[in-house]
Image (cartoon, rainbow, N blue to C red):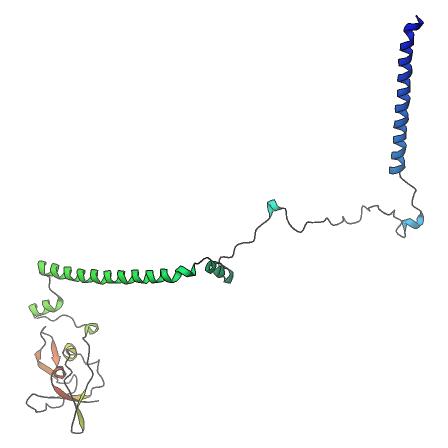
Length: 251
């Protein structure tokens, strides 16, 4: 009987010793925490200062202290500055992207293409004019001048269609202290018809006939209508003979 209880007694004693050791360890740990985190000594009246407040305390009436704000936003919400599309920086950026080595060659190629296109355009215009003429001949269409000659009624006068006017050139001869001018050899003066407002500088004029005699002096617009007409049937003035006769003018 005594031999059977001996192991049980030994186990009970060992269990009690372990419990006592565990309790001692817990008590020691609690004591150390109390010494480290304890309230410590109460501040004296001198430490409280003139305000009567304990250092480290926050007054509920005091404003909330400023929060520290980071200088840069997080990478996930960073806003990139807008890319400049105009201005010097943009121009420099665009110029930097150009291959200046090939730029001259490209410009020369474009010029060649433009010249070729212009030549094609002129050729096309000539072809269009030829086709119009063929069409007009095929269907019997007449120009206004042809219609005027056929009907005897001149086309309306259009000053924008006047032919080029040649300048007066003196022969070197003087008659009555006035210069004598060569024939103008143009169709300008016959194309004026009866209009005089384009040359108000001419006050009087006269014609030297092929016989060598001089006509009387004429005032533009005053009894100087020619008895002959132009090919289209339109009337004209005596100064139409400036084209193939010598003449004098008073300005």
